[in-house]
Image (cartoon, rainbow, N blue to C red; front, side, top):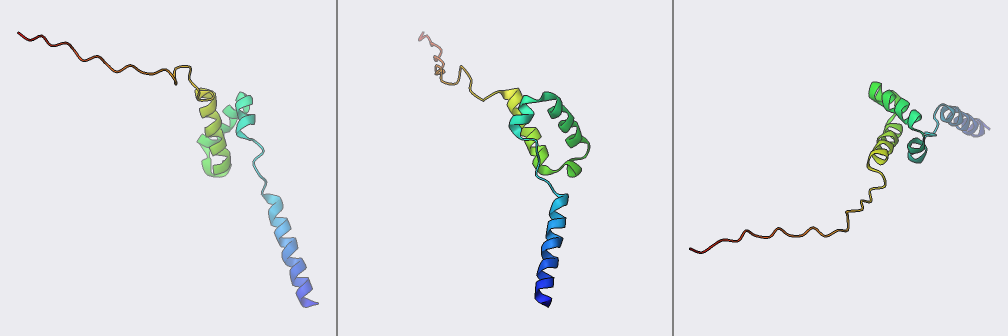
Length: 92
């Protein structure tokens, strides 16, 4: 009987502790789509990174990078860059 009470107590403590923590609801994709929320979170991360958390600030950073860089595909990425032609030297 005593073991059952200990198990129930441990489970209830873990459930209470888990209620205080929640997963970040802002994903990279949602932040890319919502620039106002991105701006707000970027300011919060700058002001107090520890309070906001590493996961949220990493998502903010990635969303900022994606908004700035786009999808990373450049129309010039597959164009071959010609090698420079060496200068012609004259033999005198």
